[in-house]
Image 1 (cartoon, protein in one colour):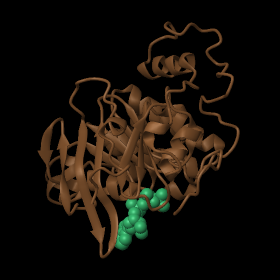
Image 2 (tube, rainbow, N blue to C red):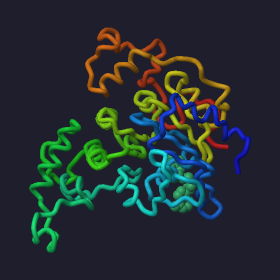
Image 3 (tube, helix red, strand yellow):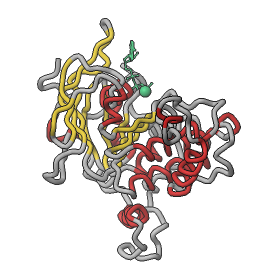
Image 4 (cartoon, rainbow, N blue to C red):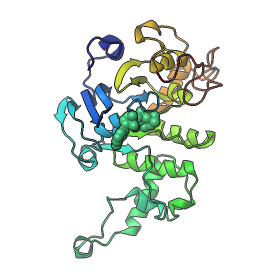
Amino acid sequence: MSSTTDTNHPDAAAPRTDNRTPVLEARKLSKSYGHVRAMVDADFELMPGEILAVIGDNGAGKSTLIKALSGAVVPDHGEILIDGKRVTFRSPIEARAMGIETVYQDLAVAPALDIASNLFLGREIRRSGPIGKLLRVVDARAMRTEAQSQLDALGVRIPDVRQPVESLSGGQRQSVAVARAAAFGTKLVIMDEPTAALGVRESGMVLDLIRRISGRGLPVVLISHNMPHVFDIADRIHIHRLGSRVAVVSPRTHTMADAVAIMTGAARPEEVGGRSHYDERASQRRRTDRDGAGPDGAGPDGADGAGPDGADGAGPDGADGAGPDGDGETRS
Ligand SMILES: Nc1ncnc2c1ncn2[C@@H]1O[C@H](COP(=O)(O)OP(=O)(O)OP(=O)(O)O)[C@@H](O)[C@H]1O
Ligand SMILES: [Mg+2]
């Protein structure tokens, strides 16, 4: 159990920048599988409108946390709050009913079904009248039209929603899964490693999609091992280690190396950070992109030249997993 160990520094763990109520909050969630403690007094906060990245080593308990927040796992202890009110989810259906949509790590699309059917999987539009109510006949045309307009609204370019999902590229498939979450998520969207299996271009597609979802005002939780992606897109970064949150950092104050050091236990949260390797102009640009406003604040020029150290996302190396500088052992 935690008490005053380095896994629980309230200050480092929760640098709340405002007094707003989190959209989604968890307090001291725990979950054990036999003697494996997948989650140990884990805290979590998602603030309105933000993109929150969740990082941590393999087995740190990220997916377990996300499953608890989305109703797929019932925690042994702890509480979950939406807009400050305590909730209990016994299934993903209950979480969905409260507007929480999740794209799980083990991607759930039905390859043989077409795109429109996948978008509406489990929530098919029925024909009106008794034919729909009694015979449960789906309204394929309405689903196609609606699917197309959802994809268009999110800028996902797919030629024909009647195509089976198995004919799509990995990135397009992932985009369908993300679009489905965006279409039905009214409160927030959670994505567990949405770019893990994707190439550079396809990852870019999905990241753009995440920005657009956030631009609609929906907060997003993004679990990722990809530090450049995380530093490119996240407003804040929740760092998970050995089943709990150990820190929440900002790309403005922490480098990728800092985040990796905390994640691996090579450094305590209070030992790193405070160094701004972050390109404020690029940050501003991302925000204006997201808010759909013009590039007014940042000024159009030079917004692209990343800071001298390239901390803005496109870190040259170590795009995956253990981070760029290999400081610290990954496992103990
Ligand atoms: N259903 C389960 N039964 C038994 N053990 C489990 C189960 N789910 C997770 N665990 C264990 O709980 C721990 C945390 O797993 P979890 O999948 O949450 O980690 P993760 O941070 O998402 O890892 P990864 O980065 O590899 O996706 C691991 O030790 C894992 O083996
Ligand atoms: Mg996982």
